Image 1: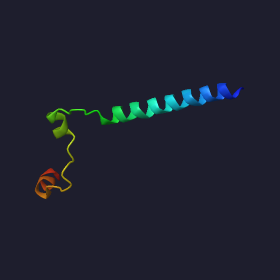
Image 2: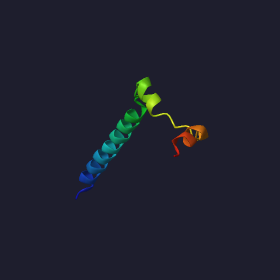
Image 3: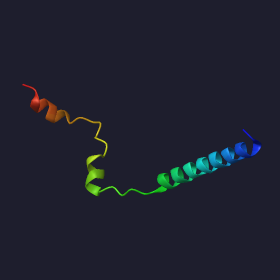
Image 4: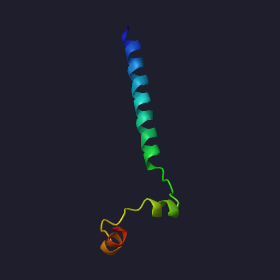
Length: 59
């Protein structure tokens, strides 16, 4: 390969890499709105047990 061909290859590779990085940043920054009912459904569960309810379930 001639020096000119290598330079063209390096420039194209660099431009591809920069486009990839810019697209990834734009993709990451996009905001996604989540429906409040879905947020409520995915909320963490209470880690404590209701002992009286457990006693009612035991035979």
